[in-house]
Image 1 (spheres, rainbow, N blue to C red):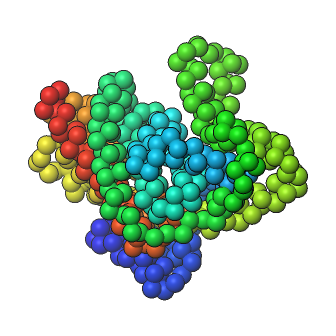
Image 2 (image 1 turned 135 degrees about the vertical axis):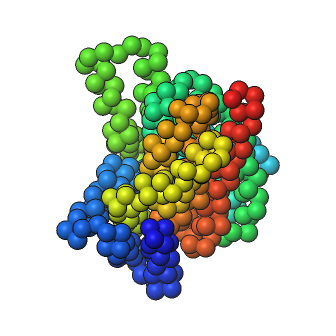
Length: 438
């Protein structure tokens, strides 16, 4: 009955948005409340779940998306985006630029949370799109597939790091095995799969449309790259410092403060306001007007992401994940496959990769004590399953859809299938490694 209610709610959500032409945020609110009632959440608690889901989902994300949009708007308007794309095309050419995008996504994705990396790399993706006149999804998917894989497979991301602790695995070995499995997964889900999407048309957000500025008036190459990637550089530095220098007391607290993505984004925006704005002859008032326009462009995205958070919280508060786990726990198959399967089903039902991974871990843990399974591989198996088929109940699905301005059908055809390929390739990699080290 629980699964039937979940399916009904997801079908209703899609119908309201596609057939009924409802605003997606309103559709999420209606479906979340209805689902809460059907799943037995007390009437007095349903709105609490909805509000908690919206608050938890937005949290720092509202700052990151808004500041990221401002940063991207100035990068595009100043000509830095055009300069970056010109340089990339000269260095890699049309033949290899997809691979360059993939490698960039992988490097950036290791230290950055997925949502942060997504927002920061969107201007770079669109700058290449407008320069090459190639379809946005074809250009962007290799980079975003790399971000997704690092989020699900590799420490220090929340889910794999927590799973390492739960299974008493080795963080270093998990990272090494994860990289080995991640590389083929990214190649197949990125540059290879992207070849099938060359005819998929999309109209990306106008916020990131580079201005047609004469070459002699563009910012310098160094200024363009450093300014545009400044948040990534600062986050990389603050991530590496603890491994190089031992920090204690006040120094440690200061480092934690400056490594917070919100602080990094704010500092970066203030710096590029000067390096790409003031120094290029723009008045501060003009720059602030640009920032205001950028926030308007992403307002709907924020609401849709918030709506997805409301539905996710309703699923969590109703105990859906435990019910699914109880149904699957008695299946007699390879524990690595079982862990992947539990995470995959919870992911498809609930939408959150982190929730799917952590819930699957708590369900599979008793099985681990009875079976001889490599704990590092179990972390990766569950991590791969937690990325399975992202769709309308996942905030990542809506971010991709709205930034790339796609229909739900085309988002499923591109984004959802990419996530599915990543999940399946991850399981295949785990099972292959298990032959040699299990």
